[in-house]
Length: 116
Image 1: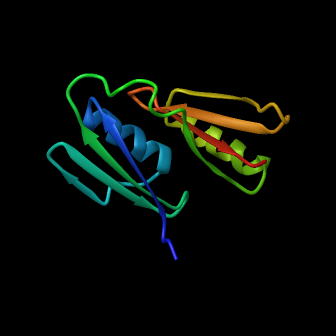
Image 2: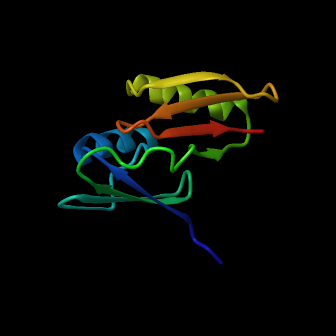
């Protein structure tokens, strides 16, 4: 059985990406070496690898990432925490009328928290 989802993202500024993901996940990276950082978090249950690349990563490869929570109160708590951490965020409703919050990392990758 899988322990956690693994996502690997190319980033242009590792320090800025690490700072963003520390705030996004409220967690420190499990590993940081030159040009690479790895987060292993339980909420959401993800292993996130960040690899620094020169120049912008290829556009159009990824739409967005995210995780589902139990209810609108949990979405609101993520929105509050991310806004308090001064992450670039937006809130709104999905086409189904459910509350969502989105945050954008320094390279423009979109992270979404939803409960529908």
